[in-house]
Length: 341
Image (cartoon, rainbow, N blue to C red; front, top):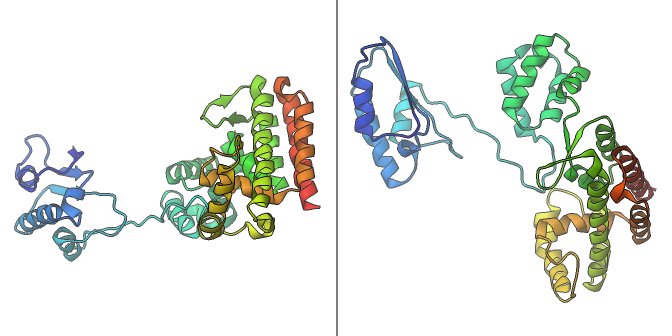
């Protein structure tokens, strides 16, 4: 029997002690037992009532499973009883990474994923390269990763190539090309365009799949907008006295956004933007503005202008899929290469 929410303790006890006419053994599952496990006064009272009733009963042929999602290990009378009986299990999950923590899988997340693989396909733990590939391809999506690991083992081809082949071409997002420009990562940009050229789908900002006829307009538009915004931010930064901050070596690290950009650079930048009529970056959020600032810092003004000129002169808004991919890809890679040089 499965209960979606926690009933009052007396109703749960009544259910536990009422024998079934049809089953000799029963399992009662309460999917959300937070009403018994929270720290608030009512929750502690409910938990104490249930714990007292359970402690005075002896069950035969019936089991009770209480589950709850909690950021911290639950406390209270019910947990104390479960601890004494050796029936309490707390499975901690790592905190979700902050937006500025750009790691694909953190160390804590990796440990959780490895434990998932151990449960469903323990043989794969003898292949650390395959485990690494699974984590890279699927990220922190434990259910998807477990299914992929099982399929890999059933196929009997335990190679990194099989991991990527099984994942297929999949989808690419516009965020990836933005990320490649922010990080000046030519390899990432190349993989993005190569996947699309091989038949992968491009997902737009609104979650829609971009059709082949729209690739030129969407790709050139997204890259052009980012570069125009970067040029605008370079001008705002100079006028705000922040020109020395336009250095890619200073815009790195997990702490740069929360500890430097947001408290120190953002107020000056926003004040300058607010004093400029018609600024193209006036409506950007703090997070969006920091991304554009990093692009502004990564590339010289002349290189940005040249890339924009090439995008605008290429007729990419009406270009077909293959032509658009080649043209935009060349502009992006040339821009990144110029910055690296």
